[in-house]
Image 1 (tube, rainbow, N blue to C red):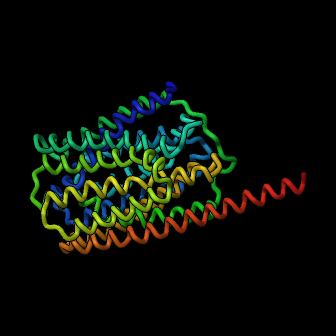
Image 2: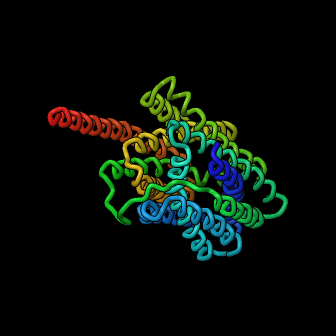
Image 3: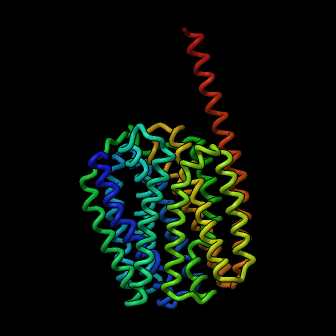
Length: 391
């Protein structure tokens, strides 16, 4: 491995572990501040909206000034955001921390895959992206398990603060990451139609997942009465399932190819989401949650790799920025709606709506992939014909 790639993956140990510690304790910290489910939904929605908005605005900036620079800045801001969350109290203080951590997350998600792509040229993109997702989700899961024990022994605030301090080790290591940035000649430019259509898929899929996923720990702890230790274990297991699902991408693609892999992942995830809606057994609910988490982690690396192959390298950060904007907008919509459903104790309706949106996301994605591949084939054919004519 290149030295910079070793620093990249090494820094991820501290960043992702710290994120796992902080994000597990986050909703429970809000609860200790006597916030309602609706208010918690607003905080999650603001965090997602901030992430998407800053990714949309700063993605093209990263293409111009260099993705690796913005990648390092966002890593620093991430740790500061979680520290701020643990130091303040009350809705407005947490609202400010939600905006700051959202800014950091949006900028990080717009640039981290760009830097990774630069450091691992010549390798198959879907495999590289899926292995990276598996790596950091494994670390976030370990942080989540640790956070559950720290929260039980001390407090949720202690877990958030510890996560922030650990995450701040990452920017010190990432200072030594050196990547070749493909810089754009313009700071701001309009995205292509293809990227805009991709962002609409991200909105749909983000809403489907955002409706329920942020409240999963509250459901396990509050609705089913699980202890902090068991809840953190299940919560961490969902992250390990994302890691496992990401590792499955490459072997599934080799065996089933793109279309069948995506169809299998969507159909099965819809069925297991509906199972969560109808079951009243906490362990069956937790099991369905884990399996659905595996399945919903499969499409992401495939979609990202497909659009990377169709996008100029100087537009990578913009592409990821707009994709993050779509995902974050969907998560914000989902979190706000999920908070309303949760405040009315309408868990079954929430999960049924989530499964319905997964169906819509699946249909739209298959149309989108067919559309962009057809356009790309037409463009390549026209170019070849023109070259043959001129020759």
